[in-house]
Length: 193
Image (tube, rainbow, N blue to C red; front, side, top):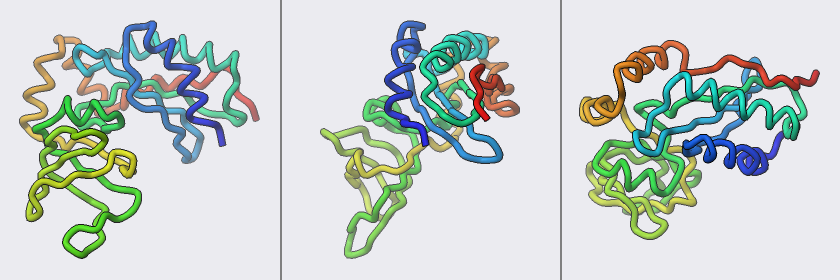
């Protein structure tokens, strides 16, 4: 399997140079291997389809040259979407007040029971801990390093606060994202058998 850290180190300068933030890099196995790269405009938290395509071409050229993945794969460059994954510590402060689902890699002892899944409004961070208000438990501090997956939950409030950042074109892209996941659908040029 390819080294995600190495791939991230390769592509991050290209993403930053293009004026965007790298949200997530993942290799997804399925019928075919997909290298998924999520980006955002730091000012809006969104991405336009044209920007995804432009950055995808630059990343594809870089990956062709460096060849960090030995097998054939598809390159997918997309926006994180409205109900975005939370992958960086700063995401939890930025989206404080919004509902999230968080799953830990291992259970956390709370009131004498192991618990892995937490849901509720984010309260931000405290050092390296994520604070979340969980119904029936109140405020819980979760170690950032222990989080396996986390994402915002789609709510009317989240939509209302996200959509005003989009242009008319951007609003159309949300509809396209639902249908196409902003997948460029471009295979990497240097595919191997």
